[in-house]
Every structure is written in structure tokens, then in C-alpha cells.
Image 1 (cartoon, rainbow, N blue to C red):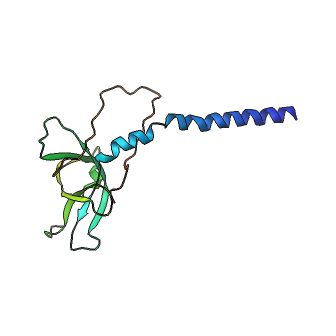
Image 2: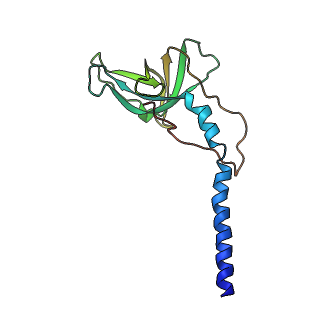
Length: 156
């Protein structure tokens, strides 16, 4: 009987420790999301005469490039999100959706670089500047935890 009680106590202690570790490790996740979210954009196609007018193909994020002009911004995304061919009907546009809600800002996008092997693409958009993400230059240490997802939010 005492062995069963000790086993249950040990199991309970281990369970409590296991539950508390992820909570402690991810305590800063909401802060990270609130900092990153304004730079996240939707990527898709838009045709104001079609139903539905917009089709979301994926997401991306605005990046800062030191030689970048103030009138355009660079969006990083996955190459598989960018259609290899667009319907050339003069009405369908390849776009970036900026903002959230039912009426995001729709901006024309132009592919400036595409790397199929690494599934990366860079797009150029114009319009009012949106917040950008910058890359850290610190070394990643073994055992550090980083939140990562391919999509932090959908713009609508």
C-alpha cells in the first residue's frame, strides 16, 4: 500500500513538473506575437469582378533591407505561395493583403526573387509603410526555445 502511495505521489510530482515547464518556457510568447503580428501580411490573388473577390494563398512578412527605398517594401514568403502563372485577363491581380478584418488594404505585388529549391520568394509592394521584422545577429544556443510558425495570423 505504501509503495502505491509513493508511486502516485511521485507520478503527481512529475506530472506537475511536466505541466509547469512549457508554461514557464512560453510565458513570453504573447509578447512575441504582439511584436511580430503587425508585420504579417496575406498573399493572394484579387479580382473585384469575381466571386469571391479575394483568394488567400498564404502569408508573408515585411522585412527591412538597408538599401530599400522608402516608397516600396519587401515581403518575404514561401515560393510555393506565389503562383507560377497568373491568369492574364487584365482583371486578376497578384496582391498582398495588409491589415486585418473584412477590409484589408489590397496592394499589387511584384515578384523580385524566387528560389524554388529553398521555397523562398521576395515580393515588392508600394504604399504606406508597414512595420518590418529584422533579423537578429545573435547565435542560437542549443536548448533555447523559439516560437516558430509559418502563419501567425490571417488578415481577414
